[in-house]
Image 1 (tube, rainbow, N blue to C red):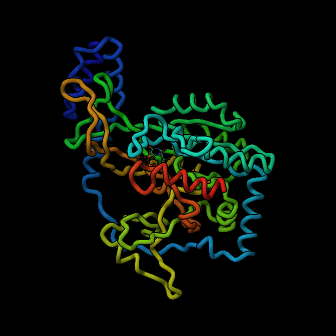
Image 2 (spheres, rainbow, N blue to C red):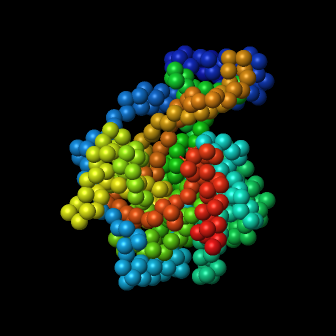
Image 3 (cartoon, rainbow, N blue to C red):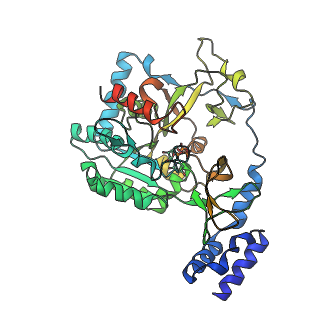
Length: 413
Ligand code: UTP
């Protein structure tokens, strides 16, 4: 233990993080061991480099930005729609499509204690977000007498609670062997002075490192092999919280397959040109999502000759990736983005404190950064009224009350 301690002290000194051992003398032997192991296994250089570099995040510029082509779902002709439905349905029926749910977020805006997927929608009978998703899968499983593999990514923090919840609910009577859980990785969070933070006096505060960690996590869990064994060809990827999103929408699946591209994404129209949301565009020749904060109005107004807006497609986290695409991404290290968030911390008296406003930086990888590794992407704009109603917090436009109302109106109608 003495050796371990002196090694840890050396590392902390090198990176000016000595405060992490502030409570060390008060800890039990097991706690001491736990904290030292954490320190010795962390890559401080990587984390602090990220922190330093991300201070100087370069905003996108209009240079090197070109439009991406897209199709509006409601504009599809009857025959096109029929063609896509037939292609999509065929792939589903043949068992070529699986579903990946990204459920490793902290749900910090919702402030719900537990995995976000276990949050219940106030409908009759009450349903959790996990059950709502499972219902969509069951609809197709029953209709086509198949079993659709459902991969659920959790954080290391909510893995156990997620599985326990499924067990308690008898896996919603879905085929147990087709629900596959796996965990993503963590990154330490950092305060505004560049210091790592304790979540307990014996534990460094780690948070899940963004939904873009999906690809490498699938590989780590040997699930790409599993997908190959199950002869999957397409994987639908989405978050846990959009109650209107059908993961097996045959039109979208058929549309993407028909495009002959490796990836597809549903988009939403950016109604307000002043909206700062990032939009789909080709950046340096590659499909991307661009941060148009400093030129949002400027590019929002650009239209082609037919009056089609060129830069108004927003990301709604609903993507279809070929298995080949997922496999190719599993060896890529995606970049990290920095987010300023509220997170409980241990104060100098060793007490846990919940801040009123954002106090720490989190580092996250995003699925959408994978787009630029492909030559093109099939974009299908959907109607937000029909397909987009996530739960993000209690007071904003995406709250549980609205989600329950919309779900009743649109899905349970
Ligand atoms: P959000 O960014 O909306 O995060 O994630 P969140 O956890 O739902 O809520 P906030 O931002 O903390 O308030 C979109 C989707 O990506 C998943 C989330 O679970 C959600 O389904 N996600 C996010 C992960 O799977 N892992 C992560 O590290 C972050």
